[in-house]
Image (tube, rainbow, N blue to C red; front, side, top):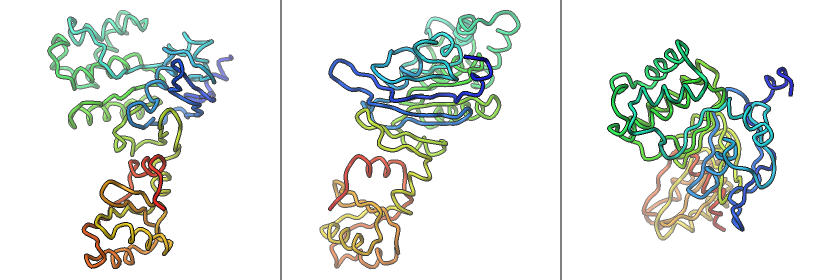
Length: 312
């Protein structure tokens, strides 16, 4: 591959990428083209195939089928070239608890080929961007889970990778540290043009993404911009409960006012596209409706509408 073609290539490309573990198909056939500088989320519950996809793209797992490339470099044939352009954050923190925060970052910088003044500048910048200054000389073992996670992200970004791959970067963290991590990632995109691919089962975290890919049991069930996916559910969602919920759902569908109708444990979830006032008028206590709540559609609604089936 020439230097010019590598520069023109998308950040990540996959074609029918899949992986099996024995008879288990962990990832079926993932096809993506992720432009440089974009923020893309792989979403879904545990077991959906997110981590398998991340390991394949990180060059740490060989595919059973299909292919993938990072900035034009095949993750199998050009593994070393692809890996050099990546910053990785895994589900479990992998920093050395016996080393201080600064020592962890200095060690990572050396592994990335940095030395001398360049190493010192990179480590100082990473500490500053992650807000780790007051903790720089603390052993990593004394940090809370949130601060250890920030060290992971700082380490992944200190050499200025062109692509960041983060597998569940905020899982188990409190809201403060989750916000710090997303602020840091936003700065990476803004200041360095970094492409960010992340996985999460917190679907609300993916609302600001340029694109989301919803996975279920290793298969892609939706793939588009969040706003487009939400619009496919309806302009807003009505949550209906009570013995008359099924009758109301059928009536709303008959009026042509529902884009989606999903059965829930307590009633129905209706994606509305028509006259909301008509729905409100139908949802009376006399009609057996105990609860009616109207709210904006979310990516969670999209996921359940694509995987949970619809009521008849």
